[in-house]
Amino acid sequence: MRKILLLGASGSIGSQSLDILRRDRQSFLLTGFSVGFHVEKIPEILKDFPSVTSICVRKEEDYNSLITQYPNIHFYWGDEGLREICEEGDYDMAVNALVGFSGLVPSIFVLRRDKILALANKESLVVGGKLIKRFLKEGNGKLYPIDSEHVAIAKLLSRVDINDVEKILITASGGSFRNMSLEELKNVTPEMALNHPTWKMGPKITIDSATMMNKGFEVIEAMVLFDLPSEKIEILMHDESHVHSLLKMKDGTYLADVSVPDMHGPIEYALYESKVDFDLVKANSLSELGDYHFHKFDPNRFKAPLIAVAAYEAGGDETTILNAANEEAVYAFLDGKIPFTDIEKEVERALEKIAFDKEKVSLRKILTLDQSTRRYCAKRFERR
Ligand code: NAD
Ligand code: MG
Image 1: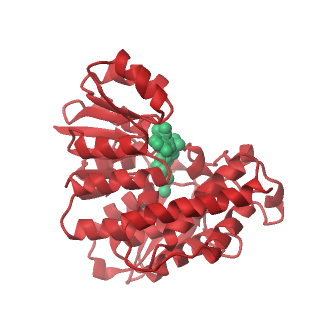
Image 2: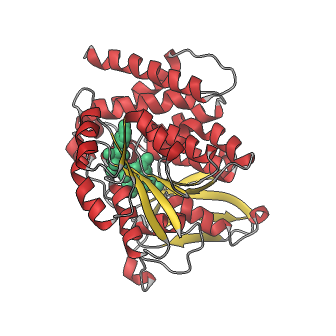
């Protein structure tokens, strides 16, 4: 039985992870979790999982009231708390379903303790990909991604000889505005952007899907996870999100992973460490899934993926600036401070203007650069 620490239990991936833990109590024991600001979710999670011994919340005042309410549980709070629960918690596998930069330090500390990391927080790989790769190469911990495309690619690669693969094709729905021109994008609202055509996800990744920064992040994620250069990875537009990704083989054959767009499948694949011989979510026949449409990716319409990959290939801490500026711009758009079309412009500007020392990547340097990028962006958005 695996002891599980679930970070981000109140979110979209977090609550779907709880579904899987609830269904298979023989294989999993939840021992700890975090909920950010959503402390109202704690009683219902504890009712279902009395095995929990540690919980992390975002705010100190929540921490202060919870320690008297639940004297038998060890509470933590804030970013420090997330690090400590990873450092001290009693678990075999941590599921990192946090959103944004807050997920990086927990990922690193889980691997440092030689534990298993089931990773939905793709920002960890965007910002800390080089560090994480180093850890894994040195034999620290194990990593299983929770992202539909990367689980699809991992499944496909496990069935073929990598030398026979010409390219990996990552599918992209194009997000909420895929049928709009650049001109039409100027007046879109956060409400419109939050309406994704195929997936129900947290707000940040939904906006990242609309700009397609998410796809740029996913190319970086694939480069880190599968140790591939960007030339070996292509984006393919696919409306229905049924084909989760493909391999283009050297003999001209395409191999595709086709299944229902439901994140329970990829989460399950990570939780069972790729040893799943059944699926929670299944289509009984291909016709049930309906039609499939593929289109060429247009880099003039969607610039964000190229900005992201160029930042990663620059080789230093550029992806820290990329990620922090993107997060700040996404939240500024959601708060009505900047138009949608400024998100990628602000990211490009931050990458161009913010100076940093290009010596070897370290966690301390990443944390400092993340903060200075956020200060730079906050000043720009304040002035508007
Ligand atoms: P979400 O917004 O629904 O949930 C995020 C969770 O993180 C919540 O529990 C929230 O309370 C917590 N959180 C946020 N900021 C925090 C902070 N500063 N400190 C502590 N806790 C904090 O997000 P989501 O859609 O579940 O996405 C989570 C991650 O998974 C993201 O990195 C996303 O890119 C990735 N992902 C999501 C999906 C999906 O279908 N939702 C698919 C693939 C990958
Ligand atoms: Mg994805």
